[in-house]
Image (cartoon, rainbow, N blue to C red):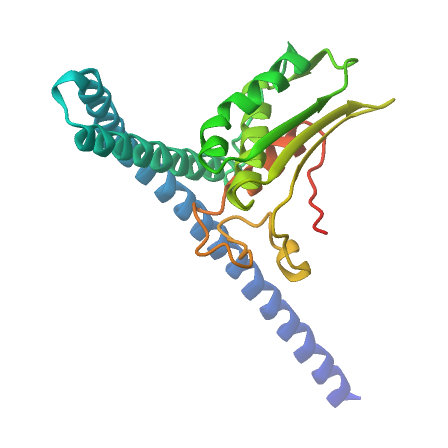
Length: 245
């Protein structure tokens, strides 16, 4: 009987020790995540300032186009597009840092969704034109005023269109369909791209995870756009999902 009681007491002590160890590990993980988010945010702010300066100087050079050769103007264009790409990545890192710290907020105000949807393809026109990709739009005429964060919704739709363009072959089509049913608004972005495997679909919304697309070469960007988009939609009480056929 004494041996049984001793064994029971020993098990209780071991369980308490394990719980204490798990608690310590959770605190350590939280501290590490907090330090990572803080580092990413600080690094992003530090990088943004010189990049903005480079971008500004490239704009000034463009204004002197009469004094530049064709090759020089092309170099200036490359500098600007590279700055745009890096600034986009930095903004994504800042957003994911806010998400991980639980600090991302949405500011909901009434705006005309139909009007905004008509403008979104213009933001993606340049990369689409470069690949001769046609953007098709189908917008429900009943869509009108909604209460949401217009800037953040526009960010999500641009992210989705950009991904569609990135993984669609030149000369193909992408599109956006928006409709309203009784209780919700459904927006679909589709493409004629190469598709994603079932294994990769499971991690497509994970931060910093870049999904490989057959024949697409090395993935671009930091792998944050879809993770950020999903969180923005969830903050609006909605959901974001993906299908691949």
